[in-house]
Length: 263
Image (tube, rainbow, N blue to C red; front, side, top):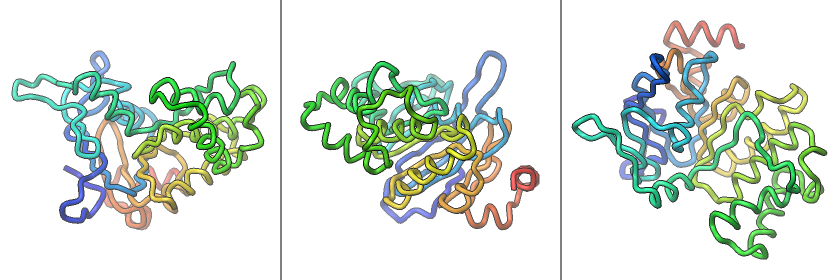
């Protein structure tokens, strides 16, 4: 199994994916993807469009069901495959609890247009975790301060720029207090001048040692912020190495060709 880290003995990885396979119709989108992510790692997943990066991310938190393989989150099995080749997920209650360990930020912001910024952030903690409004509002305001948007707490999404919407989406995911943050090309829908403000928020999370798995085309972010970089192509992990090594001397010809085109 490719590993992106040199793990300390006895320390459980935050994410273990083993031999993940996923097919849409006759198309094999994931062809046996295996990866480990340790606590505090920032792993950038790069590669050409259509290589299976986003599908892999969605399989980790059960937005897509896998056809075979195993996913273990912080030592708890989300899904495994038995000796007969049957894929078995955790029971519903356990499944939801394990998935709540992961927050996800999508390409599109997916904010509720009829709710204010503050209401968007407190909705899930109240409805999913059952937290009191008085408990979560100070936390939400602190998260808005963290992403530089406290002054927008009472604004509606229609009054925000794309970069501001994405930062609200990051705050909303963090409000559930996840152990892991998954980012699916979070800047791809933004104008170039708005990308920096979102990347700054992500960089701050990295500095706070949040475990992050980031599908991205932002090579500067991958090189400067990531601890490890994974290159995917045609549904497979072609190369997985520490960020500095990957950008200084990629080993696989497919990785070399991709980075020459992107840099």
